[in-house]
Length: 57
Image (cartoon, rainbow, N blue to C red; front, side, top):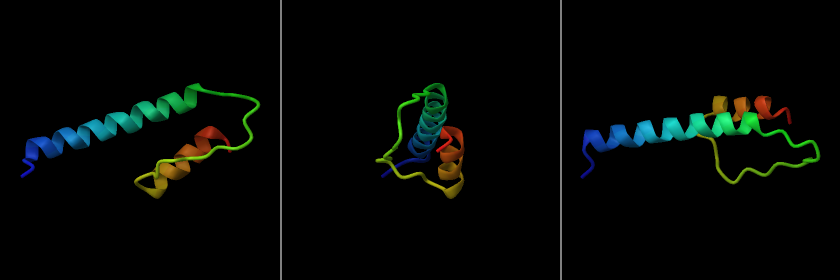
């Protein structure tokens, strides 16, 4: 049985993960990349659109 503390830790972990991933994506700019393949699926449409806008693709 998952307690509410475990649920909270899981939510906090994923929010930190998404934040750090977004920061890492914005820091990398490789000029010769023409195609990007995502193997993970964003949780919401807003996160997906933000990642497209940030990457400029």
